[in-house]
Length: 181
Ligand SMILES: [Cu+2]
Picture 1 (cartoon, protein in one colour):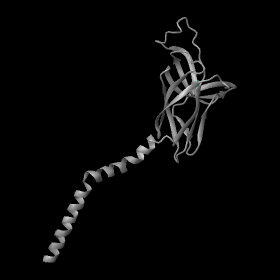
Picture 2 (spheres, rainbow, N blue to C red; picture 1 turned 120 degrees about the horizontal axis):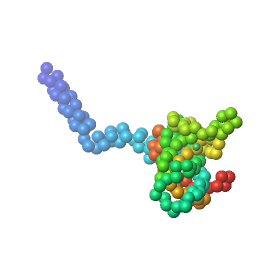
Picture 3 (tube, helix red, strand yellow; picture 1 turned 30 degrees about the horizontal axis):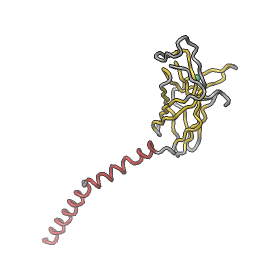
Picture 4 (cartoon, rainbow, N blue to C red; picture 1 turned 120 degrees about the vertical axis):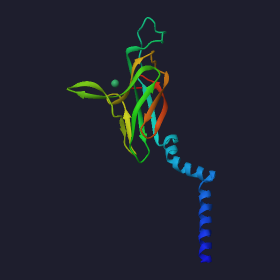
């Protein structure tokens, strides 16, 4: 009976010790790192989603006040083209794009409907298949810049932020180039 009590007390002290071990800051930190590591590697690694060859159509604002960039020109648009490679084992989605050179940015797709080229806004995002790539190019997917605040001249570059469902936010530099160059 005494022996059993000793065993009980002994196992209790082991439990207590292991409990205090579990709550020690070092172990807690390791635990937190373990919990958050998958998220960190998903958003900070730059190799999972690779964005290549980003360029935009030039746009010239014909205005008497060309130097005045304080207001947007609602009718002036441009389009951004690029290639997105997905090096992960899961499909991702380009949900949204943002740029400071215009009033609004939309994801568009050009389609031929009744022999006419038409653009439609994509609401569900652009799917980037696992281990695959998607090319945003003239006549297909593009990032529409609506209401430019100034001209986009060949050689200019400006930042565009891309928001992916899994990979998070990526800011890229887009260079203005004439089509076919
Ligand atoms: Cu468009």
